[in-house]
Length: 459
Image (cartoon, rainbow, N blue to C red; front, side, top):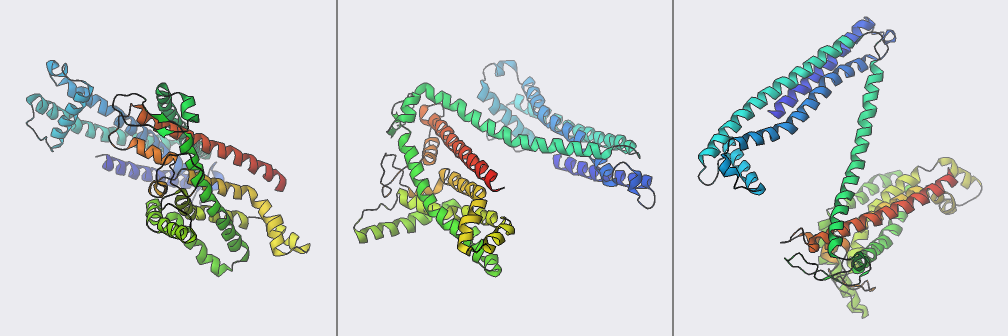
């Protein structure tokens, strides 16, 4: 019923747009002389469409929000009081699910009680009446909006002002969604992290050098929760990845932007960007099955012990994965450098390589720093590659040829399996996530400072 209602509502909105458009053109005259109107005919059509759609959509959303609560109360009103008095919150939810299953016709596995059948019958009847009532109310409101807005279409009516005001509000709301989502994520992690710090001292967490949380069902904080081994493993793997991705990606961008022919650039750039579309689990399997054994074989040939699963293996493959982030963004930034800077440098006698090093790269530095930041954030937050290729060894060691563990891998480990989500063994995942957020925020602040500094110099 909801899909049918939305389809009818879209049809009414389309009709309203046409009505507003036709009436405004009729007012303008046979020659569609919109100069006699305050706004273009399209604005009047959009105004009528908005009056058809926005109030009806609001009522539709409020109805769907309120109706389940009313139906829930109606179901419980049909259940005998002596039955409800013996049910806790979870048992009431199970009962509600059983009634809904019976009302939908799917039924339940065991024998339904008479009061469940009675409640299901009332539920089905109320649902049917509610669907028809919702359909009638929403369509009537849409038609009323059409009639109201159609009467508003006059020669001096400021339709453009109202439509553009609505567009500004819609854009502001879209921006607010992203901001509120970020705030919601941070607050949820922060609240759960505070619960974790009731079990574990923050000093022990942030400065501890041993990670051994253990798994208990008693809700105690038995074990060690030192962050430093995980943080070091994350930074070590990310540093190796950036050492691989930044030089290669930047050199690819310089070549494609300054040296490659248009024909070579046309097919080379899309092929490089395909690397960004490969699922990370594929990179993880590739690292585990190919790169890790290859590095181990190379180490045996030169007399160096290299673990097949190590920071080097994970970082190298991760670097390959983030090459497109560096190369594609840097290439776009380099090509946006004004041609006048190139011509001026070459006209003064500089070679092409000197022009790139002393003119183009400094001018494009803010955008290139942004590309490096995106690559760093991608490396820090990567999970699947390090799960398969890093070795999951939470030890504080500087040797990149040995196995390590990262913050993201530990979050996965702590939240999977048979875990009590009120225990410190699970709550630590939120503290780790909040730590990653703070690290990423710090990178953003540093990059913003660099971008502003050099933008002032070269703009």
